[in-house]
Length: 392
Ligand code: CAA
Image 1 (cartoon, helix red, strand yellow):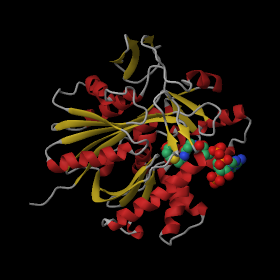
Image 2 (spheres, helix red, strand yellow):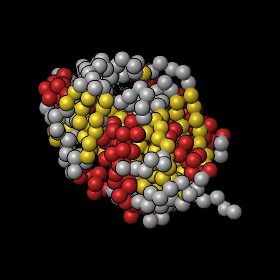
Image 3 (cartoon, protein in one colour):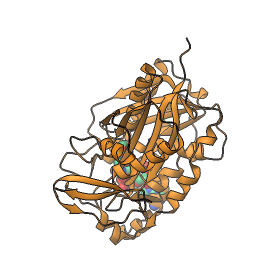
């Protein structure tokens, strides 16, 4: 009996209602806008409206997957997030209710900073390997928040990526080889009382690159493809120049150094979404993949290397193969429309929307009706979060 290919049948993203252009933030901070547009490689960031969160973004992306695919056999939903909305209940339970999924489904949440979306993919592949007739919906959804006036401020953002994992997929085969690396490092973390992350910015960059070398070596040791056999590379992009730094480091590591300008060009097809959405933690590496897939180049048959890094720090390098006919399954138009529809805000409004540092203890909260999306976070009643479909 031949083992069927396992992988991703469909993948799409949703983002938040508002957009802040980083030129405005630079102006407000009195610094050269090129520091953001060139230095860190960011143009804008998505910001949730008061009635949006990881659940509403995740449900929006997931609804698109459900509408376009046969989901017979869907029995697992994994919700990966750094910015979960409850210490106990998985955010995916709210999504399952909003989407009207049957009760015969297991739902759980995974956490390990920005890594847990890639971790959820591996768990999903395990389920499908054991039960090839089953499907798994993975949602990676995050709102990245740093303190106002901190160095991390221009690297905030928000998005959710959702994908359907199954046997005999139409879009991407996930190859069996993968390399993992864990190191206990204090580079970025978020204690329970904080909405915003604590970060050692410069140290986090070197921790990321050390992890890349470690995961790469483990990938190779477990039968992963040689560097020259990989056609394109997608990196976790907390800011897009991080991917450039990382790829320069990997190229140097394998003895294939290139000048920075060429590396910038090499990674250009992978940065388009992250440049304008900002960091979306667990979703970010998949936004890099989506930017590449949605681009003009025909990637049929190509191998893509993917590096996921979650501070703290857990990382993984793995590879996928792009399957023939993949273009018929892309959501390019929806992605472009959604980015274009974001409502721009000025800096005073952005600062008003920022939740501050401490987690709110409100047990009663009515959110204004703002989002144009299909789901909204209505508010909190007696400590219980309420969501609804908007009909949009
Ligand atoms: N024109 C062009 N470039 C400029 C410039 C100008 N006017 N002014 C500065 N620059 C360049 C700098 O030379 C620098 O480039 P290099 O990195 O190549 O040296 C770059 O812009 C950034 O400048 P600084 O280093 O001075 O920036 P900073 O200290 O204010 O902050 C940061 C940068 C550390 C990334 C900060 O934004 C931060 O802390 N971000 C959050 C942490 C983060 O994203 N870490 C990434 C790895 S951890 C991870 O990946 C997990 C995760 O998602 C958080």
